Length: 104
Ligand SMILES: Cc1cc2nc3c(=O)[nH]c(=O)nc-3n(C[C@H](O)[C@H](O)[C@H](O)COP(=O)(O)OP(=O)(O)OC[C@H]3O[C@@H](n4cnc5c(N)ncnc54)[C@H](O)[C@@H]3O)c2cc1C
Image (cartoon, rainbow, N blue to C red; front, top):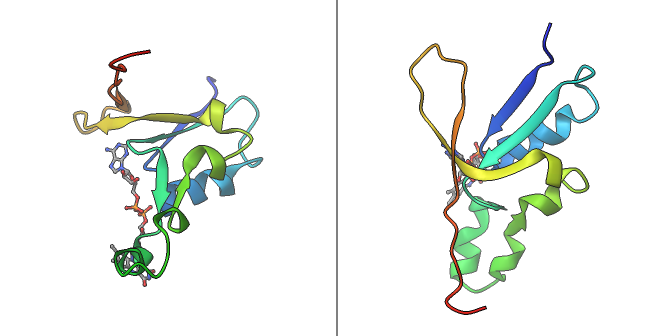
């Protein structure tokens, strides 16, 4: 039997907490990958306070690689999962577009 490959879609509260909860609980050989189209998690309920300038934006945003440290480099892919035909067990990932610098 081939090892399970689990893909979690979305790096919000649900996705990051699921990845953390599954850590150390997967069967041997199984892989776990988090795919999200943003590199950060935003604590939406406090956006109003950011707008009101009572807290700083960086207080409601946390980089996914920081949340999932130290395993993030192996487990996080930045990109958007695009729909497949129903019944096909395949997650197709459109990788985040690269932004070449104007000047290096
Ligand atoms: C103003 C406001 C106030 C709120 N107040 C409360 C509150 O008081 N109490 C409470 O319990 N909840 C509250 N909520 C709701 C709470 O923020 C959400 O329940 C929570 O953020 C949901 O987490 P999630 O992981 O499901 O989704 P999200 O946090 O939205 O994360 C989803 C992530 O998945 C990514 N994503 C989506 N589709 C794809 C794709 N196809 N491929 C790759 N990545 C994808 C998104 O970019 C995002 O990063 C509030 C929300 C708002 C906006």
